[in-house]
Image 1 (cartoon, rainbow, N blue to C red):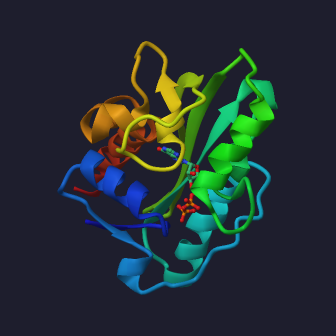
Image 2: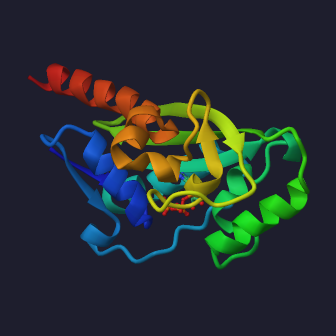
Length: 196
Ligand code: ITT
């Protein structure tokens, strides 16, 4: 069964392909030749996830899902949150985003943060919105070469390595995206049961 993942982010695509059973074929926007930069004008992860999935559903009429994700830092009142990709400007400059976070935290001892991932799903004329989270702490140096985005500055709770140091196998056991994908897999499996 084919399902479209409404993303331009290759890192998310790779992670999800490794998490979802291979009996489902996950196609990205690129794979269906959709070059449109979907405007993420929502004020929440839920709103932006719905905007991205609705775009594909209404333009192509296909089963699809989206992932709007972000890093929420307690000492910054939940920022960068829904602005995670563009925290320092529209260029989605990851290095500049990290520098902005460090500068705003300014050595604050409260480094508590979490990644959240919200999926909006259109499947067989039904809609679902689900979420995964991972708690952790921000550090003031970059560590590790794996993952993407803020992974080198985020240490998940109970670990002493960043998500970038843990590598893809460990990250995919504990990440916000892994938690959301577990629920998504269950929804897919339940739908298959209903079809046959
Ligand atoms: P799409 O909208 O095309 O899916 P995007 O990168 O713009 O791709 P988001 O709007 O959801 O996606 O932005 C999420 C940002 O949050 C992302 O660009 C990263 O900077 C950060 N982020 C999300 N998940 C992450 C992860 O697993 N590790 C590190 N950073 C992550």
